[in-house]
Length: 455
Ligand code: 5GP
Ligand code: MG
Image (cartoon, rainbow, N blue to C red; front, side, top):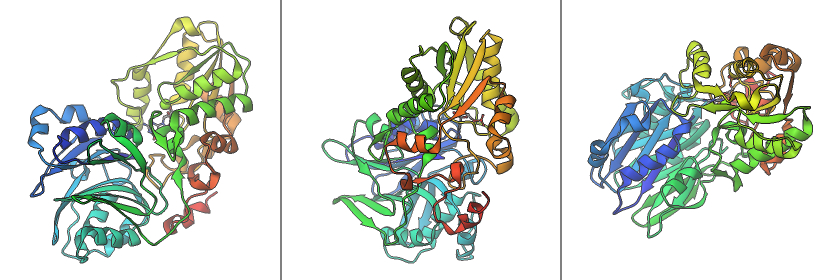
């Protein structure tokens, strides 16, 4: 996972716009962040490990002057969490320097790396660098032709932004696994961003999604679009709807908030509970919790207060820190829980680290019964396309039955949303999604042919 932005806005403070757009995408990655700016002559970049607010200050932003900017915030899936893997990547090529920002995961980065000229040295360990070095290695005369050529060879998920000295590009893999959208500033200029919430944050108007397999180029003549020839069945990541995207974003015209609210309503129909109150695990499950309460006619209460200044439980890719994170993050509201039969709604159970701790926390403050409801089906397969979902061994639902999970998490009852119910809540047809983690229906990407057979 990652967040990417591109700003093309002559006459405006593009570094600051990129900064605020990235701030709106901080949930997509908290390991490193960077902004690169071009004034038409040269590219200046600032990239560091850590959260956006800790990296950029007035002095740094004021040094980033230009009319186009590329920004990135990172959550590593392939390649470790070190500064050489932080983005945007700055590259020199025979057609000038450029910066590259990637969200996704290439499934063929190893074989792609073998096709690089031997004189090109990979300094990072990420799949993203292979893509940017392929651009460097291309002998096409324009950046657009280079991107089109690399897109023909790259497989997997890539929603990217590229900035040259004078042009901004946004492009998306032919499956459209990760989101990427386009907005326009009043009075001229464009913004490209992973999610529409970032477009709104910088005061631009949302125009449309960048299409799967499309390259958008923005330069002094305006906006140009080109669809690369290869057509693939669409495979937008369902986990964006379940968990990843911000609730105030829209995907394919559908509000994420409303989709999650519907998931909660649908879940209440599928797995009603004999209980007194409904609560959600903040923040991501709140729309689902409100939906569940509305449909079931039970009062919605706040059972846990989340400390927003502590990073996500996934912030450290290390299991010991992750476990510690849960306890540091939530404090219960005793008055809403004591003596109550509580329905607790969460958006997903991945490894099964969070839920048992939450159940224990609720029981410790006197909840009489705890009924866990999850607004997604069991996650039974890993993600090869950019979500940090780990391996089969680590996925609790890949190894235990629902009743075994219920016992392990210590709940009085457990109910997962059905796949049909989930799809219905999105308001989009099932064949638009990658459902690999839920039922093994990965997009038809050659490297994924094998894992599909797993279950
Ligand atoms: P688990 O603790 O079972 O491994 O993960 C489930 C919890 O983590 C849920 O509360 C869910 O909201 C959250 N979660 C699920 N997927 C991700 C992810 O990719 N990143 C982060 N940071 N949290 C996640
Ligand atoms: Mg959560």
